[in-house]
Image (cartoon, rainbow, N blue to C red):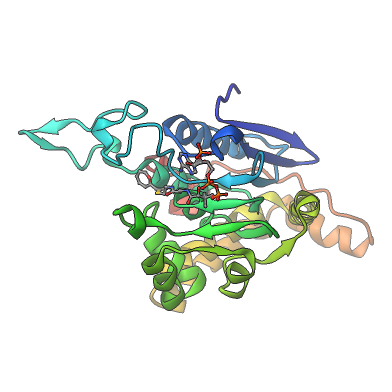
Length: 296
Ligand SMILES: CC(C)(COP(=O)(O)OP(=O)(O)OC[C@H]1O[C@@H](n2cnc3c(N)ncnc32)[C@H](O)[C@@H]1OP(=O)(O)O)[C@@H](O)C(=O)NCCC(=O)NCCSC(=O)/C=C1/CC=CC=CO1
């Protein structure tokens, strides 16, 4: 796959996606939106990929929207890197896909991913550079990482569905503190606030992310996909009964699979499991979210 703003590399069942505009602090633009969506399509479509790591090239993870790209503006129709929003009866058609914030399209694509996703945050992560991390399952960061929900400082609003993700991850008070203040805060504050799992010296970050990804990748791929979606989706449930119905379907669906036989047999034979399970055609029947092209 030919990408211009990112690179991807697959090794040992792990796809590493690297934001790759180091001379611009990996600032986000329209091309990066399309590249990231395509990279997560790549991750989902490859059977050899069982976990994903997202990191940045150079000293930053991502400095947010490229403020140089369209002049000092967030006006979508004034930017050349995005398709314009069409008008209906002289008014912008807000139901059109072009009216959706590009960062949000990436965030929702990551949310939809069927593999575990680890953020390896190697430096400054601001604006969409931090909100794109929120649907990743776990974030590790380097000692020099900094984070900033700087939206109020730029006169806009928290984007990329972060008003759903952030309070769920860190609680409403912490979410509002970071978004009201717009301060750029260090790795230690990110860890204390629950945004980051662990902090590493810069040269130990990627090895640590790989170690974790390899551990996750040992699980049965279909189990991992279902686990990922059951956990995330049930954050929106009102009652544990909803979760009980979903996990009952999961148990029923996986119960007869070869992966269950392999999981049990490998345990009894005291050897590592070799899972071969693939996505089956009846997935959407059991799990309505399985196939959601509208997120793209
Ligand atoms: C915290 C910083 C990211 C890094 O700070 P520091 O390490 O001290 O580096 P600086 O000296 O500030 O910056 C180095 C050079 O990079 C340029 N630069 C930094 N960020 C950007 C950017 N986002 N776009 C373009 N250029 C950038 C900076 O001007 C320096 O250039 P020179 O060396 O030529 O002077 C810090 O840089 C910072 O806070 N940057 C601003 C981050 C920001 O506000 N990003 C946008 C947030 S909003 C967003 O991401 C979301 C949306 C949402 C919806 C719709 C549309 C768009 O955006």
